[in-house]
Length: 267
Image: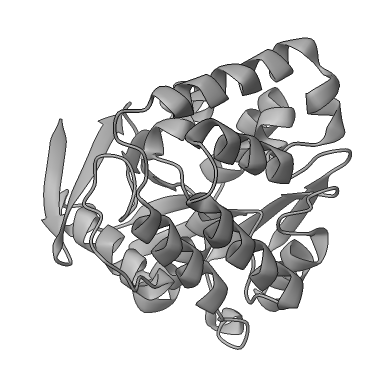
């Protein structure tokens, strides 16, 4: 297991594949291992750098508060330790907010970005979702909390698909049996970081090429959020998947993996 000390924490990371460096930043509650279905494809084209965010997985879980700026500095330290001076970045959900901050704070480090289900600011509905997530974290079993997250991220078509639904059941069982689940304080700190992320006025300063992706039926980070980010970043590309939720990247796995690979190889 590989760790580096960065920004006051011990951060767990893995490197897979060969080629141009590609940094993958995961979302709230999830460790870097959740990239598996994409990593297994992209590692044939890129040197993929995957880490566990502050507060989850094998990385340190210090007391809050956390911020997206702070987590971006965690990744800046990781890149420095790995002697990576320029990197493509793919961030999903909270990971997209960290990617934006990394780009804004260290623009020379980022060559291009793919922002999946991103937001530049939270409205009242978004804040309420994160507040509710905090409120129920300590009241549900790990399996039931996993079911709640599944309700937020999967489109009806996934629930209706027997194989995908079985994967959801397996995921709940794995959450229940996890020997080191995310502690309440770390989930709370990540959720507050998500709520406080507000960079809409700064996004026009991003000069890197960006691809914005989302699901048209996303109830967690709705379509308007992706459109707002795309409209604010000059020259960005936007693609929204029909009949897809927050987990559009799994619900359109083959198209998503190829689309991102092809775009990154040209940017």
